[in-house]
Amino acid sequence: MKKALRVGDTLARVGGDEFIVIMVHLENTEDSTPVLEQILKPVSDPITVGDAVMQVSASIGLSLPTKWLRSEPSHVSCRPGCVHR
Image (cartoon, rainbow, N blue to C red; front, side, top):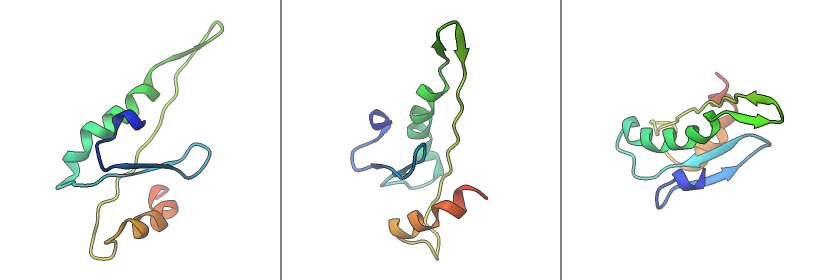
């Protein structure tokens, strides 16, 4: 995941399989697409374990600043409810 990030972006593990990426210098949601695609690519590749081929999936939620979410701490504290809506 770190390889997908740009200079200034931050990656943090907040749970067993849960991560937060704080991306800077986004003008719109489309600016995040290349980074998000690079994060998902390795996860979507099939994994072979013995004779079995396994396919794993992942999901990503995107939170952009609004009038009531102006800072990274606000976005992070919103994470549990925002991600699982």
